[in-house]
Length: 289
Length: 251
Image 1: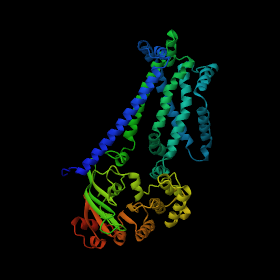
Image 2: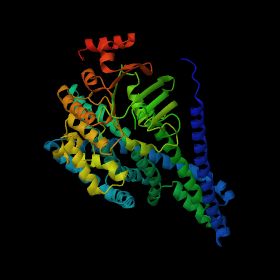
Image 3: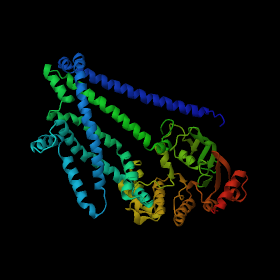
Image 4: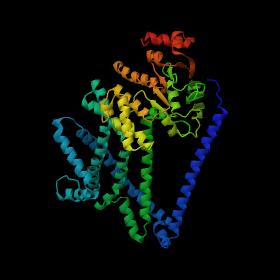
């Protein structure tokens, strides 16, 4: 490759693009700074601010409650991971069942549809009450009675319905020609789903799937109503000591700190396995048109 | 506009992807109402050139003058330019969620702020023109490849472009459907549309082209009237390329 030197004209173009980029960055930075400053001024100059600050943002108290909250977080994490595994398995099954073709499968399709309709419609809190107090109430031998397990069951019931619908949307978005190509190679219906349709479907619905998992992660705190000692219940107990809301703020920060890495992880997975080739073709390496 | 000032004038066009230099100092002039056919092996830069002319790619260097205005300049209004330069792709690229009429009226209504009734009347005229008046409410997936490509041409034409770019528009079509698309392009040429056509249809090139450009190594390796380029190519590479094409039974 001979050494190529950009023409003067091109150097001017590049310089123009640079100044334009710089200008938009500056505008973004300055406007954000103004908005944030105004917001901060409004809040801190409000008459109740000293009391709110004392009650919500007492750093010393925050450090005090942090270790206890982190210990309680372990419960949330366990519930989250266990529930997510079951949700993925059951939701895949239900999405698969709902997309089965032909009249023979009508009964299972109907059952799957009825299940998703019911559990997507029921508020999470109600499901928790029904499962949490209903199942032990039956006094069946061997039925779970620990609020931890019952909470997980309720979470799985609700979130399976959501995730199944997300996966079904993904499955239906895969072009029929993909199935035709797979079947033409002799793959069975199940193999086609497993190797061709499902991987493409999951890739497409990764963002909404993550949405549901973040939501599940947060809803583990609802299990506290059954008496499971997790982050929010611990924060509530801490708050009861001095009627300061610092523990809630710290608990909130913990949940945010949990979800942000999850989002970044999904983004990077999507970028890696996603349409990397397409992107390389279509994005412009230098400045946008 | 006189013959002396071309509608399109490309000078020293360069485009690379990383270390892969696809266009390297390419020059090209296109007179108004003329048809320029680009030939060359896969990867010789035909598609990249067309994409650069429609500003779908940001060029690395060089000048692209349309009506005397440098459109490669970052200050160019790219969307305004695209109304003047239409492009038709190899794989049609119709919007599958919109019916034929909506595909055609999209840009007139959303970009050019045309009234729905006006846009639809013009779209129907254009559909009639490409012989698909009865398909206005069909979905792209329900049409044959040739029909889809004719809709794609109508979609580009409805913006009344000064220049039409055709990027191997018949390469994805069945042989018996190629004719209907080439026929339409012949009619466009007869009406005086300025066109740049990247194609492997050498017979069509020979018949319709005013100039044929053989692209190799990122620039125009040989260019001339079709009877010269096809009849007595001067460059060894052109000869070699045409020999291969002939062997493949395309000429």
